[in-house]
Amino acid sequence: MADPSEDQPVAVVTGSSRGLGRALAEHFLGQGYRVAGCSRGDGSIDHADYHHARVDIGDEAAVTGWAKEVRRGLKRVDVVVANAGLARAALLLSMTPGDVFDDFMRVNFAGVFYTLREFSKVMMRTGGGRVIAISSTMVPLSQDGTGIYSATKAGITSMTKVLAREIAPQGITCNVIAPAMMRTDASAELAKDGDWEERMLALQTFPRAIDFDEVCHAADFFVSEKARSITGQVVYIGVVD
Amino acid sequence: MMSKEEALALMQETLDSLTRSGTLKGEVKADPDTILMGTGADASLDSLGFVTFIMELEDRLSDAADGDLAIVLTDIDGFDINSPILTAGVLADHLSKLTG
Image 1 (tube, each protein chain N blue to C red):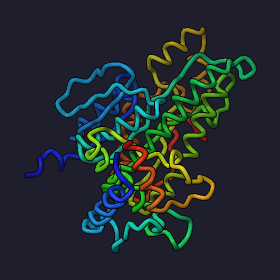
Image 2 (spheres, helix red, strand yellow):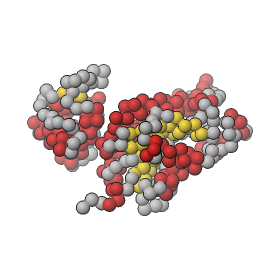
Image 3 (tube, rainbow over the protein chains, first blue to last red):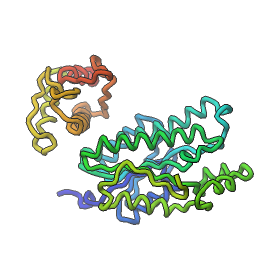
Image 4 (cartoon, each protein chain N blue to C red):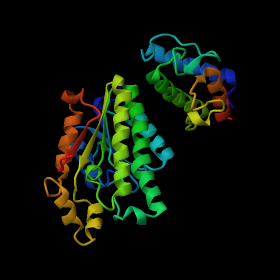
């Protein structure tokens, strides 16, 4: 007899131990999903339907192995949110060391690529799903010191749009949510740099920190049945592109 | 180590299973010259069929080998990423090597 929990939808959220990823994971749990989350460290969510894995998403083999575990253990993937990424102290491009560039490319770009590649394959096999990639309003704002970070986020947007075309025939939509500044551990670190937060907020159309639930609401929209034909789109939150 | 014939048989089992489940529209024979992945009408599987076939095959291969094995296209001798054509025979040779 099939396990009745196999009818329960599954959401995959990367970077789910804190910040936006944790909020998204808890949000999907609240919506009745089983959630497979990952981070480099231990999980921080205690819920019967939450399944945590220690995964460095910049490690191709680790992501491939995790996707297999999820597919075999939970049998399906309905939603994947590629959220995990680095946000580090800003440096002018001319001052950015090569290893910082490499870190950003490995985690923010390659990590999202591995996540989307592996979990979209699971969705293709099970016949439908929703892909959401988290980008940033730093892409259209082109601010000093965000050259590498913004480049990875712009790359994520382009990659997601191409994937949207490639897997649309399988009934899978792929969209991007690009929030403006949120108060996270990473932004708190950046805010130690004098007036960083004030400068960031001054760039936004709504000059306030974006709440996690605003991002969750956008995710709900993309996941909804009524958004089944909406794909390859970018929703900016807090900024006019 | 899996022989080439055993690898072709495993591929045939996988293809038959996908046909029975409706993932593949018609029967596909795992003959050495069968083009599984290609750029034109010669290919026996469409993109969805190929991805599903590889995933299913990995599962069966891992079960048979009692270990977690992954099929990485760029690791296959004779597969050119710039001219991506993969025959069942070339894949069978790779599976033999992978399980060796």
